[in-house]
Amino acid sequence: MSSRIETDLPAKLAEIVGPRRVRIEAERLDELSWDALSEGRLHPLKRPQTALPLCVAEPETTVEVQAIVRLANQEKIPVVPFGGGTGLMGGALSIRPNILLDLRGMNQILEIDPVACSARAQAGVVLEALEKKLNDAGFILGHDPWTLPVATVGGAISTDSVGYRASIYGSMGEQVLGLEAVMAGGEILRTRAVQKSSAGIDLNALLVGGEGCFGIITEATVRIFPAPEARSLTGFRFESFERGYTAVQGMFSRRLRPALIDLGDDGEKPAAGAVLYVAFEGGREIIELEAKCALTICEQNGGKQLPGGQAERFWRDRHVVARRFMENRRQRRTRGRDGIYRDWIHVALPASKVLPFRAAAAPLIEQRGVQLQESGLWVHPELFSMRLGIEDDGSNQAQLRLAETIEEMLRLAQKMGGSMEYTHGIGVKLAPLMAEEHGYGLEIMRQIKRALDPNGILNPGKMGL
Ligand SMILES: Cc1cc2nc3c(=O)[nH]c(=O)nc-3n(C[C@H](O)[C@H](O)[C@H](O)COP(=O)(O)OP(=O)(O)OC[C@H]3O[C@@H](n4cnc5c(N)ncnc54)[C@H](O)[C@@H]3O)c2cc1C
Image 1 (cartoon, rainbow, N blue to C red):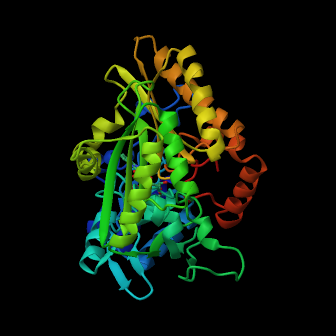
Image 2: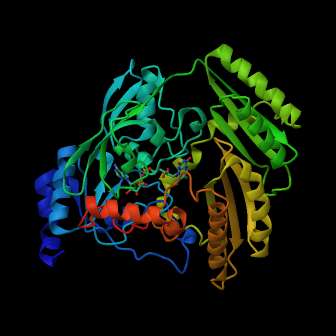
Image 3: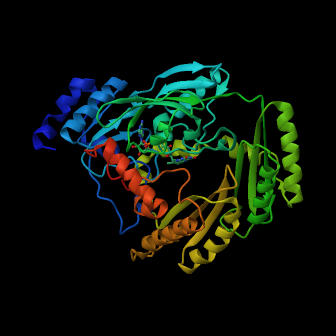
């Protein structure tokens, strides 16, 4: 990239999107240079370099994205796509000077097809806006993460995000029928929006979980669902996580189809029992039967129903954290400076390995002087998470100890046949572990990246690519 183009860039971008949609104010560049990865969660010895974007472009159409990418490719300037900026792994972090593509102006819901049960939307549509529009038409989106009020369609697909009700509706990637994306040379890829095709390999897979490294999603057609006639939501308390887990497995082996499964340690003491929230959605008669069956299974495992109101509160407050995040993005970035470092793992394991993993992890965590604050299961019996914390003793060692413990846990999951992350993607945070995760698979990804993006302009330095 020449210094001439750096100087000319705002004017060149203004020719594409108009001057009002090119931003160069220092405050704006700083704000959009970070996503929701807090500094306290970075491995202190593996911190990526950071940079400010050269400028922010706010396209509203696919043609504008195409022209920006062509310019970037010609001048070899990195392009970082930015949706809601809620990614927790630094996928949208600016690690080199770049054109930051703020996609939130691409906010049109283009079509709702009630017969095909699908919706087509631009990539920058906020999930909650789509949900509301679908509700008016008698449908739901299905994808329902904590960050529903902030995250965008394109960002959710690019991280293959998982929401509260993914047990029946699937991850955001699983809901994708067809995509439109601008590739590194400015070509436009459009895949056919059908549930199933055997006409060659599935090119949606290049973009689902692709974190903007293989193409920039401009539109998506996703599966939607008729609004459920009824929902049953119940909370149970179990004397141990293991008994709660056995109940969850019992439900899945009986082929019940809960919309929500949320099993977690009760409070910050993993030995103090566990709480399970389970929901069913759909036709009234069917869910009544399913809920009855789930109640029997839970009671057989010692589950005691929680007092009325607790489950409803859990459900009502599920997006509160995202609204707080919106109010104070910056505080989130610097989190970890309040005297306690915290981090999470979200691993996918064979169901037979979840309890052995939890049992093996606890003593390793304790040996390192780190606190296991909570473990939990979300959505499926295979998706297991843990929250770890350590007090900052002022020596800089605490953050390192936490980061090393997290890596040890992720490697343990890999060793037990699992995957190190099921919902938040890789970004910069987990990039150093990609070779262990994928082996030769990472080399294949790198070859695909080189073939499609020879100048390496699309979100370079992310996902270990
Ligand atoms: C408080 C909190 C709670 C959360 N809860 C959940 C949860 O329940 N479930 C869950 O799965 N995640 C959760 N997350 C993580 C986050 O919401 C997801 O990763 C989200 O899916 C990212 O969407 P976004 O629009 O914010 O994308 P961004 O953060 O802007 O971007 C994410 C990645 O996608 C790329 N990208 C963005 N748009 C495009 C595009 N159009 N084309 C190509 N690449 C693109 C970016 O470059 C980046 O690599 C949570 C985060 C926070 C802060």
